[in-house]
Figure (cartoon, rainbow, N blue to C red):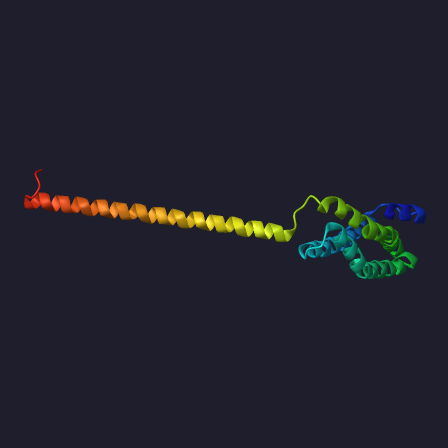
Amino acid sequence: AAVFAMWLSGTSINIYSQIGLLLLVGVMSKNSILMVEFADQLRDAGRSVLEAAQEAAATRLRPILMAMSSTVLGALPLVLGSGPGAESRAAIGWVIFGGLSLAAVFTLFLTPVVYLGLARFVTRRAQQGEQLARKRMVQEKIADSWLDLEQFRLLLLRTAWRIDQCRDYRKVRGDIAA
């Protein structure tokens, strides 16, 4: 959409339009990340994937539209501006204005669909935390049992040393034959 808007306006792909594309990708990914993060929180609360995706899309609709519309309307003076440097400002303005208009649709409708397709194959974070806690508990038990074995080995060594000490003492006294 951004390239189409540039083509309609007759601007070329230059450093300013590339900066606008970078901003466009950043805003799109930010909104998608916020929606997916909210859906993940709902899944951790016990909702199904479908319910989490629907509620996240409905709940995040207003903040996403507000961010998109303010950015698009903020780019409007760049597009309509005139005077020295207007061509460079117009390049970045057309990318933002044209790109975010269609990016809003992609973010609001495509992100939940992709989330529905991929979230089914991923375990919930709460389950991952429980698995990690179980794994740590097993590791601690293994470490404790290893310490118990090490203490037992040291006790055996001390006992054997004491037996040797007693045997040597008895040899010196003459109680035992050498």
